[in-house]
Length: 253
Length: 106
Image (cartoon, rainbow over all chains, first blue to last red; front, side, top):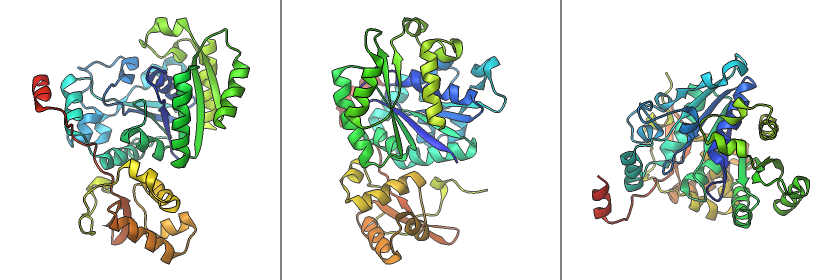
């Protein structure tokens, strides 16, 4: 049975898009058919990790929402990134949002139909025969992110070990509980090496009464890569990648 | 070929203008919120499926659905001769910013 996994954070800059891309790729590497949709229409970014430019995006999620194409026409097979690590059964698809300024301003100006967006998620699962659909979300609470949270089988909340993130995560956890998300996982990202990761995990789990799937160490190697590639596929044995792999296993269950 | 949800029969509830906002869902009583959450995930369901999901009696569920339809949060559509209930999700609202700003952006 297909599962929808939303990757969310209350604040921006926590690493949602990188986490979505890397987690989705790892899950695909295990042999699953995986889709990723960028619902951060106001500030899209995950497409960068797959080398997409304006020219390569013939159709985007925006076009689907404006009735210009079917949702599956805005899906791009990016399984080639799995390269030699690819389990032959695994596939990876990206449904990007448009990076064109006029498309972003059009959405801001005219809005779009949430019912159509919701239908699109299900159609993607059906048409691409997906095992997992990862949703990369805009930060914070708004209609789009509330919709993503509502339809998710698994909600992955990303936070940094930072007071603003801690407070914001409390709000999101409360909302997610009200929306009856079946499974919620916390991922602490950009944790400095001076922190006691074990103590941090216990503290976060106790504070939110929610499982911490992993604590991702702050990585200069990751920063140096600068979203030019999927870190966990490029460096599968890096400590960062091993934590991410463990998070992926908890998603697969 | 099965039609996509957005291509299905026209709704047969009056005044079925999409009006359900996710913030509305949060404000619903627990039982109604639970049903609407589930309907949003499923995109649509029959009365029988909703009864099975909620484990409540059909009259109770029907009353709840009638209320949700009345509020404009759920619509009734016909799919292959059967009635289905579908959440009437609204739209991301249009901007209220000055037209001058949008015109400047082109």
